[in-house]
Image 1 (tube, rainbow, N blue to C red):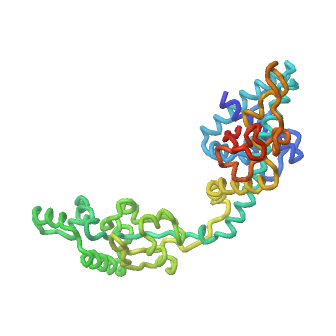
Image 2: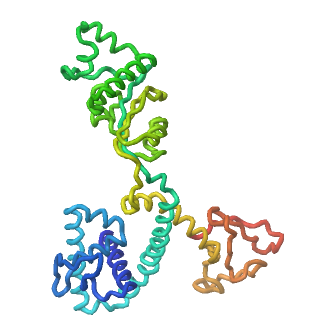
Image 3: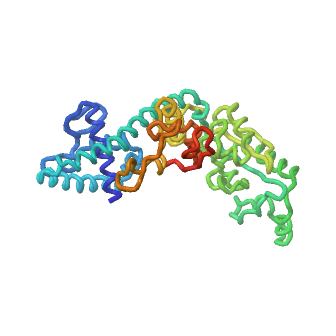
Length: 376
């Protein structure tokens, strides 16, 4: 049932989208940016690539789903099942029933129209955010060779033959001597000296990625040649690791340039800019921005609407039958000052306050009041 309602909301949204665009039939006409390639026919109805594209344009989760062949096949199967039932219902006259009309109005009011309205706001705010925060989306790619010191340096890596760390640094030493050295924390001075020797070898033309794999103590990047990936000036994932100084320096370097050692809290790093900074296209980051700002956009929009449109909450007491309706012995309580229509309009803060106070019955303006929760 849940899947049916999810798919129903998507189909209804698609129909609304088509209606607003002036289209009469889903996928019936090839238009710019779409495809009329038929994927499956159910009776006389054809489901085309454009049908899928329009659903994906409305719902980002559909866009992600159809990115894989399996996901697209699953969506197509669901659409076929719903189309089969739709045609059967139409033949039986159920498509024009009062229940269908009520369901359509319900979904239109509480699902489709609010979602389309929010999506339009989100679309404009996404473009605005991108234009105002281009530093966040200007990224370069860099690699590093990290040499730790103090209690942070890990045990030496396993011997990899002539190219291994032990073979290069400890050749000729006995096993006990090597073991003792591995258990001794590397000092800051030793880390700087090792980094300087690596930098010298880089200047002589040795491969950065190979030296990173051999020497770097950063377990997350050493096997990939020290690659830290694409990063902005304040890339959160690298800032959390204490690599802020690397980013600051990297944005002053040219592509291919090597610099270091740079002192960090837990070690020193040599960096190399492997790709120059470039602004990522809007299309590449659009979904990421929407995901990040969606809740804020929704919250700000609702705050504005609550200022423009009066919202009144009713209590359980106020919703009871009045004048003996449903209960011959009940009596209508005399209206007190401020009780016009037995409706209470709470102040703005009442929207987040679990209780509100009403004048006590029979005490007029001097009543102490009773706390009652607002009805959701």
